[in-house]
Length: 335
Image (tube, rainbow, N blue to C red; front, side, top):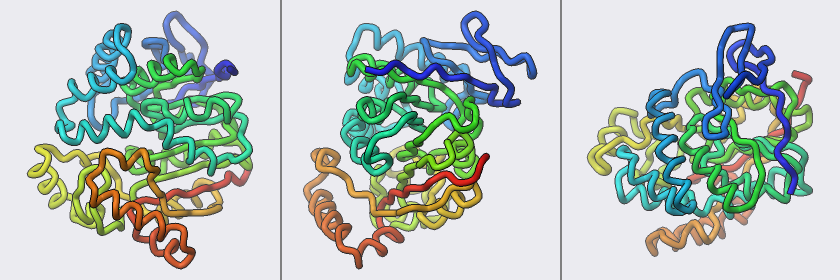
């Protein structure tokens, strides 16, 4: 198994080189220290949309301590047991989604790099499923997430799978990597969860090699059917205040409060401004494992959807207004 690439980190604030200093990295230009916590470099400039920085680090510490004595599946369950803003019913759905992440990522990596690749960046890597799936697909693998708590969970998954990868905590809009570091970028279920989608996409493009490829999958904001996670119909088309009220009544909290609804056209438009040329967009079809715990009627519609997605005439309609899409872009220019 190939060891993680020795990355040359840069300061995400001023883009100057940083050097190792004690238990972290130091930028002499802007006099800023970035700690290494639980073996993970933390280059964040602020907290995420859900937790303040110190509160998030404390939660990551609880997960790290729990993970020392329990396996990956138990750690995922523990995460949702201490996460108050995810209702129990949705927690079970989300946990199942996390546990099956590696199998799901395998299909995405085949589209991103059929013959394999050199250096993979998994943007918004979450629990590290794609890093495990890409172990035999890429020479080196790096996972980035703004949530240190999820990187602690990813660390456990990687250890149990016997896979080496570099985990880095950072803002997607200000990645701590030099230009042209990665040959491939995976951004699965990421763009709609980014704090600033366009800035995050351009930041990813800046660290890609010219000719490198990026895979993006997302829920479609123009889908009129039930939202994959919450079951709310036309979630991306309902005015934000009305959607928030509906979700709060159904789940006691607005679990989509930090989501930016996007569509294939808006992603292509953002990509053009980041020197990314569109290659292909297809309907995203869930695999069988993702459907095991779903209601029978959901599985029935999913099977019909999968059949339609294979028909050229139906593909264009499903891309434009189906529940989810997947797009592939190539990096142009010299930036």
